[in-house]
Image (tube, rainbow, N blue to C red; front, side):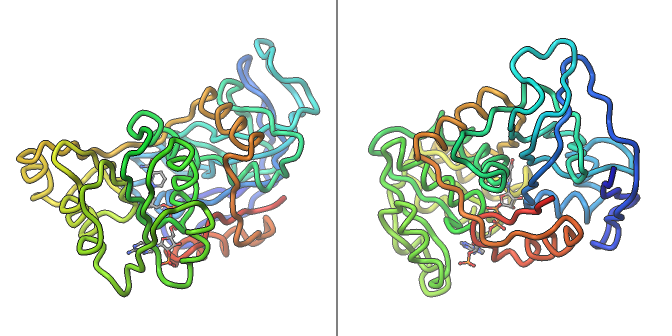
Length: 313
Ligand SMILES: NC(=O)c1ccc[n+]([C@@H]2O[C@H](COP(=O)([O-])OP(=O)(O)OC[C@H]3O[C@@H](n4cnc5c(N)ncnc54)[C@H](OP(=O)(O)O)[C@@H]3O)[C@@H](O)[C@H]2O)c1
């Protein structure tokens, strides 16, 4: 089968399209013929930097990156009872770990997958994986009815799902993006938009119960100013915070934490239910053919992607 092998970290030229043996599913695994893959900033960071590859993938190169898949089951291991060949499935496979999803086939743990709803395309299903999963894993335990919530980068992969989930939980949602994405962010259900290029968000909002920080650094520092005493911030880009963040947060009893998304079949089934119920609508801004996977990485590297970018096989 064809797969992109990464022999060393660096530029996109290190993603080498190669011919390798297809995987054999273990007893608790499902062999999936991949139809669509979604690309995230973490795909770019693990490809580019050895320390991120070590932290997320945890094995020496050569490795096969990629975690977010949608496809058709072609074989199942002996212990698999919930899927049969022919089922359409989606999931975020082996995260953190080596996902091995930049390939025509992947052997995926059965308990990390869900069936794709009947009316959902492979592309939309592949889009509703890591970015939707982190939004769900962060928000479902921290946000409740009538909370005031600030979501940074509401037009991005994570942000566009986070707005929809926070609204579903009954929150009042403020979100940032540049002016060109204002209408998109408002159409997702946000109650208020802040154009971060024209306004300092910390001068526009205050008294927030919860902030989802998708930017880190100064955005994290300034987010502390808009959270009420006893409020919460989850920062996604890095576990390393600027040094003044923790002492300041402690003084005001603000809970600031980094959360790393984790593969979880129960959460995948919640995402499936949300797709079926129309609670979640993924937005795909660009689809690349498998042969142009490197272009998809370059698109993510711009930091200006709207919604999700998909690679189609
Ligand atoms: N810890 C975890 O488990 C986890 C999971 C998922 C993602 N993450 C991290 O979370 C971050 C966001 O991920 P993502 O997938 O949402 O990225 P993304 O899709 O690449 O985000 C792009 C969006 O960011 C917006 N943006 C850029 N600069 C901004 C700013 N200063 N203020 C507000 N919006 C801004 C852009 O809108 P405009 O074009 O309008 O500026 C664009 O729509 C990344 O660092 C990623 O690695 C972590």
